[in-house]
Amino acid sequence: MIADQFDWLRGHAPGSVWRLLARLGIGYKRARDYLHSPDPHYQAKRAWIDEHRARAERQPERFPLLYLDELSYYRQPELSWAYEAVGHAQPLARRSYASNTCFRLVATLDAITGQVIYLQRSHITTACLSDFFAQVQAAYPGRDDCHCPDNWPVHFHPDVLCRLQPQQLPTEPRQKAIRDTLPIQLLCLPTYASWLNPIEKLWRWLKQEVIRLHRCADDWPRLKSLVATFLDRFLNGSSALLRYVGLLPY
Image (cartoon, rainbow, N blue to C red; front, side, top):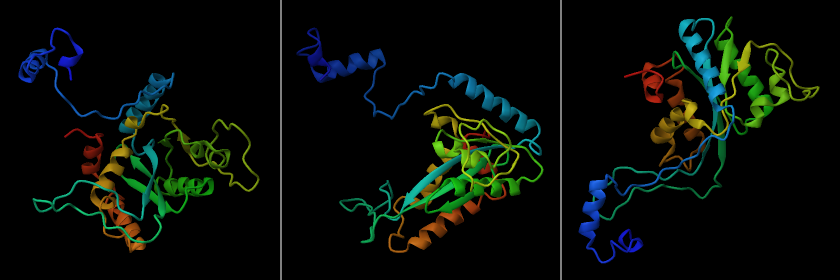
């Protein structure tokens, strides 16, 4: 195909073209997904988060830095690679006849200790997220937390922000929203910059070990239990998790 694009290569044998590409250091590769953050304040936001992370490293007992994110998983198993006997046999994603129910998970990852705090619900609403912040603060009594969420609008909904210490409220919360002064500050990640949120790699680990090709399509409660069992391993922190997500050098 390359030879057909150039008059001076047309008619050359594929081996000749291959040797030319080898000399030029060009190889045939599988593409990867790519998205560049369009946020004009990308560098400033990243520097701001790095500054708070450095402070957390100096004073983890007072200023923890927590990465926050949500994950959806489903009753029907995801396809993936797996070991199987050689030949025509293939790994099977064993599905059920039930509807492909979705469940939601919200969690924080401590950038210094690797501690994971999580909550599972059918939907992550503003009330649910507000209660989750209270749950996180109960695990960090007497400390000023900094959370790094992505730009999901629910993270910055007035009904959520009014539960925290003073922040920039875009509009007024509803009357039924819980008011409080939880010592939590939100450090907004740059737009479309998931690579700056290490908890994304925790989700990858969870999918590889539990969600993909799971055998619980006919036992929905068991799948939720397996997800909880996996995350419970990190309730008291984990250096292995910090290494896995890239927050701790090997």
